[in-house]
Image 1 (cartoon, rainbow, N blue to C red):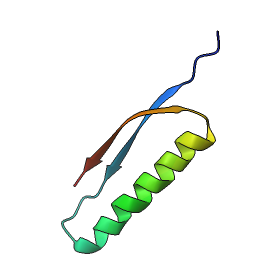
Image 2 (image 1 turned 135 degrees about the vertical axis):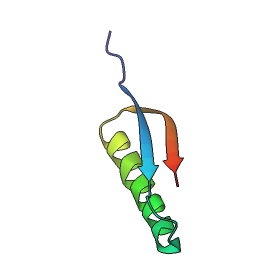
Image 3 (image 1 turned 120 degrees about the vertical axis):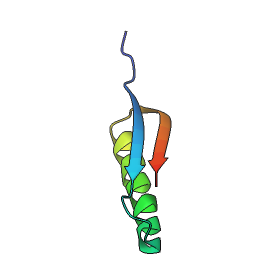
Length: 49
């Protein structure tokens, strides 16, 4: 049986600077792309600000 690997993404910024908010969107987008490109099953995501 060939099971799909499961994956989660984790995005984080370490400052309260408003310019970092776009970094979260970029991190999430890139993470989801990697998961999709590898045909993994996205099961959850975490964002820490």
